Length: 141
View 1 (cartoon, rainbow, N blue to C red):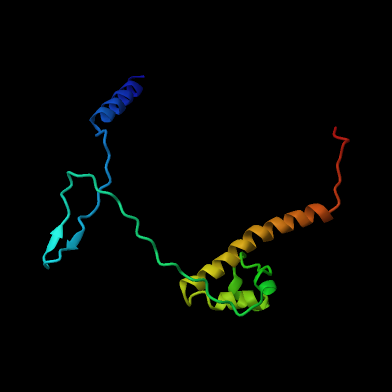
View 2 (view 1 turned 90 degrees about the horizontal axis):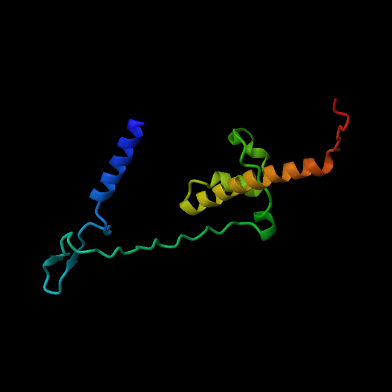
């Protein structure tokens, strides 16, 4: 009981000590003036507006396949794919072989892997549910 009371008092005291106004702080930005010298931004006493720096848009690499082939399933979510990658369809082999060429190629490979995990697992469960005979035992003793 004493420990919980001390913990509550500690939380209350920490809450009173914490500053009420939290401001975003950043590293001072050095901006060149028209004269040539570099002007430093204001000290930490002012609130600094944070600026979002957008990434450059990465393009998805052009894949040498038609639309139907691109969206065919790949079962790349299994372990040990290196030992049986030769048995995959051609677009799966292409994405597996080119996965380290660029970030876009790696994104294509990981997309195939993610689709294989979700749609492969889900498809198998649904197929088993639809095709396997259901037997219900109502004679429970």
